Amino acid sequence: MSFSAEIKEELAELIPSEFSLFTAELQGLLLYGAKLTEKEGGTELRFLSEHEESAKKYFTFIRKTDRIKTDFAITTHHTNGKNKTCTAFLSPEDTAVLLESAALGYENGEFQIGRKAEQKLSGEEERRAFLRGAFLAAGSVSDPERFYHLEFVCSDENKAWYLKLLLSALGETAGVVQRKGHYVVYLKDSDGIVALLGMMGASRALLALEEIRVVKDMRNRVNRTVNCETANLQKTVAAALKQRKDIEYIRDAEGFENLPSTLAEMAEIRLEYPDVSLKELGTYLNPPVGKSGVNHRLRKLSEYADELRGHEKRG
Image (cartoon, rainbow, N blue to C red; front, top):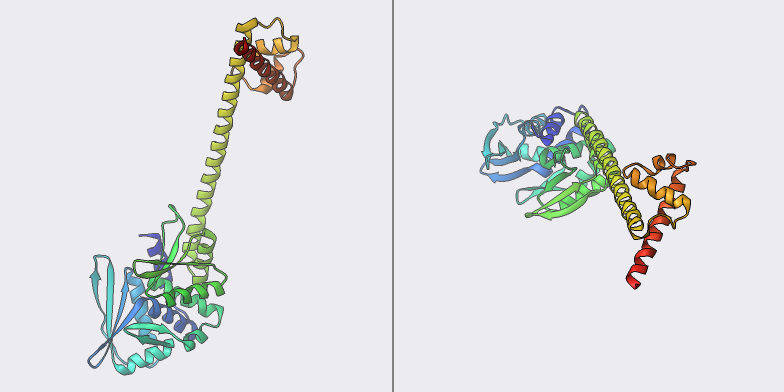
């Protein structure tokens, strides 16, 4: 089961006890996942979802709506081998009750948000319930092992911006992009996704994502440390090779006799111990010196080698 499906499985289990939260979630389900088609004698209600539990919750909510009398049948068929289209036939009276309860209108088969619906979402808990319904209808989350991305696919621009503004009212910044004739509201940062899962009530999914985040963060820190240590080691090896080449050039060009005794000793010790660290090199000198002292002497040797090379080129 995908991470998205696990989230929807969890959200589908949550049934609001308060009527205001019930209608707010129903709004999200209808607005982002349902269509109405006028038929002779009533209205056909269609809900498209790849997640069967979302569809079951959707129709459970409709059955619980006050004053709906029709004991409608639900038919389900697969679309494109993936999505399931669930349909129910409502009488004109029951359609009116449903629209009134959710405070929605509809035009050309699409549910539309109105001022009454906005008034129903004045409280934070109602907004969270609405987001839960919207996610069940149109939301998805990528596999967090790969990357962080949560999105809602909306049928028109107004619904996308309404959702963006609602998220903003809850403290989350979302982007909006057009893709294949739809408008997509998305979050890409893991903190925002974790916060939204918490708002919707997906506590199991939230903990799972947090665990993945901790593991990924630890893995990234280990990789950064290893990469840093590897880079430092490469620099150390490159520096040691250059030091050895410079000292060998001095030796072959004129020997160490003309060098100050401290530099001559340093040159001989470096050739004898080509792979040890600067700190360890210092312990072989008489008297021993620290890392900075060793580094100073080796730098002087490199400068002297460069002088000799310059003389050779001019000569």
